[in-house]
Amino acid sequence: MDFLSLRSGPNSSISSSIEYNVWPLVHSGLARVRVPEDLMARLDVQFDCLAQQARVPSHALFLVGEISNGKQLTVTNPDEDYTTLLLESARKLARSILREEAEEMDYDVDQVWTVHQRAGDYNPVHFHSNARSDFGFSSFLHVRLPAQLHGGRDSSSGSGGSGPGGPGGPGSDSCGFAASGGDPALLPLHQDEEEWQPPCHDGTTNFFWRTDGGSAVERLESPGSMALEIAEGFLYVFPQWLQHYVLPFQGEGERRTIAANISICKAALHRKK
Image 1 (cartoon, rainbow, N blue to C red):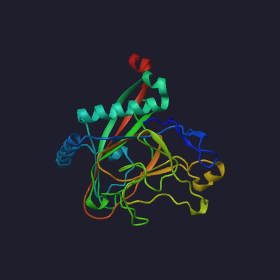
Image 2: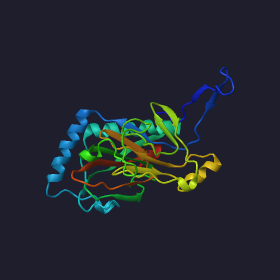
Image 3: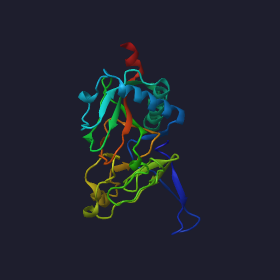
Image 4: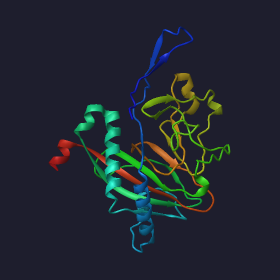
């Protein structure tokens, strides 16, 4: 995924022979990675066993989640293939943002935990940090979803389905630039600040990096919010400073997620310690 990809094409309103180029003025990004089905199945079995153990450490003390019907558990020995995929995804995202400087960094898994969310559970607005460095990435992966959340049911309109980024990608209410297949896609801007509303989907994770909504139109800027359609099997990696929240869902079943923080350190400094 390359957040500095060039988007070009003929400007037919002027002349079919004239081409135009658009570079998105973004300062960061997030990555979405398809997780192999065999790893997904193995993680689900592992978390079944974890949830059934009597003395599993709760991770709730380190989190802000309002999880009263489910649980949040510390994963002390994460799956090796999951860890490999997570770190490689972090490296690829870092390279797309930092370019050559990313090669001078060391990447380590800081904390891993599971969230077993049930009806009414939610996460308020928050961001992440890690204990090993001042900056890094965070991540989440939906391992299991209840039947009513498959397809990303939209609680505001009753519609669902995939957003412009494909299954599991940014929803139709997303604002700003989304990346799919390596090419940035300019999503629609809201035309009126009074009409702008944050996305509202049952059980979705919602990112935002600015709060002034539609006023960005007058500055020719993209409003900074993104709603991710719900789907199993997509690992999301994003800068730990990125604020986000998770809406509750209603009905039976469990929304099972594995989350992790990745520390990033200057390699030379890291090796001196």
